[in-house]
Image (tube, rainbow, N blue to C red; front, top):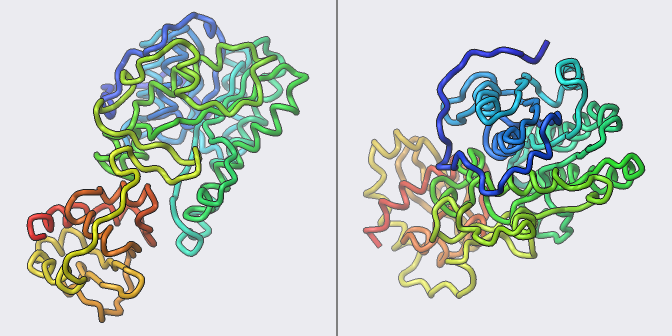
Length: 423
């Protein structure tokens, strides 16, 4: 089978400073209930699983991480350990939700062990914030396969058992269906894949209303301190995030409600916890005092932390050539060896290529194909160099566009830091 009733005990590491205790008191309403959750080997899924376990719930962890990754802590076994420690009963299942057979096997093993399934949580997700030309079909298929198809597949497999439950919920970690083009223009494939999950909520809430199955979505108001966010935006973005506990508390509150009447909603985490009487949201802030990044798909503007919202950029002093000339002394063999990257900065009327792979040069006449291209004004570029805006913040707020590999682009923050003393 895909699921292990016993697993080898191992050490548990705290992740991204998240607390061990949740902020919302457990009522015990999920005691003895069985929860099938996808993508729960770390982050938000793990936090929700542990929160439900404190009620004495049975939790089936359906995820594909069995061995710890150097950059992604957490496996189905470390989460199973935390579930048991919290007072729940765990069933870790090694499942790629793109594999219908593996999903069905995990559901069958869960029903065999626990007698049924009461709650299905679709948390597994894949992300690539890339435009059409920079999203290979393999990456497109991954996002559609995990986000949209995977959610549909897991829900379908759990459905016969949910229909037999007296407290049946389906909860998808997906956004409200905001049709403003700004949420499509920079990453249409990712948006389609996430909205596919949300469309499941829209349709299934009505389809299963007569079965008294509550079908809802939950989405964070801000960035959440997870491995995915750290890879997207590094330490700066983690500090501007809330911990996964706010999503866990909000999910728990939704799952505690009557499924016959609580259905068809696109909930936002902070609104849910406020409705439950929690007024101090600072307790969820990863680094209190740091401006929070709003999440995607909420409102009509790209996310920007409060500290850089509004205001006009100051006029440039000195031309691009003068600014670029100050980079050359920094392109040492050590820097080239470390970065191994060709990137371009496109100001609209001119493009400068930084060859940090072979030549160690900065030129507006170099036609070497770049690994990454930054599109922005000279003013924004200068603010990035001077540290007035983090690379991540400029990207997230729409002041900078990135073509190519986003992860590679974030490596350049170290070079920009070295440049600050020169300007």
